[in-house]
Length: 117
Length: 111
Image (cartoon, helix red, strand yellow):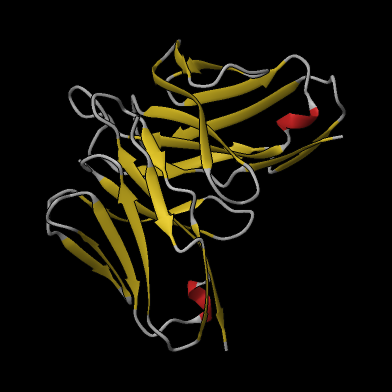
């Protein structure tokens, strides 16, 4: 069966410090991978998604970047954190059909709560 | 761009009561996904609907997609405290692999 891991689970960082959040998926190959941020326990904001190694689409210009160094690894980074980067970060994966992931369920990781002080 | 609107935003019900959450799209829905989230945790996939008029059930939760494929409802029968959480609907977007999400409905169930 497939599983998705995120770490760390919680993180407290000072303003201006770097960030690296990691997401890995097991039990599937060539998945679509997604990074979301959730504020105030409500709506999800899509930050980045990837349909393959080294392929990153950015949805919102901001202080963050993403990389996919391996098929089932997705990393969210920042060189200098801002107060506004605080939030709950969720990674998700989705199987790809022959041409896309549309019509397939999307599964989420447990999340990382980031507090920037 | 496509938008999903959920109603109500918040719901407080007594245990044992039935309830319905709605998700309305500004465009035709090609795939509609329901998720549940407990505070501080990831989203748990509940059900996926694709065909107009489709209905799926899991335990006491039933989801429907209307014939016109622009609205979905999530119905909980005989609610329990374990049903409490935030319910979010998500939808496929045309020609992309991205899901868009509604803003969520917060459900509280009191004894």
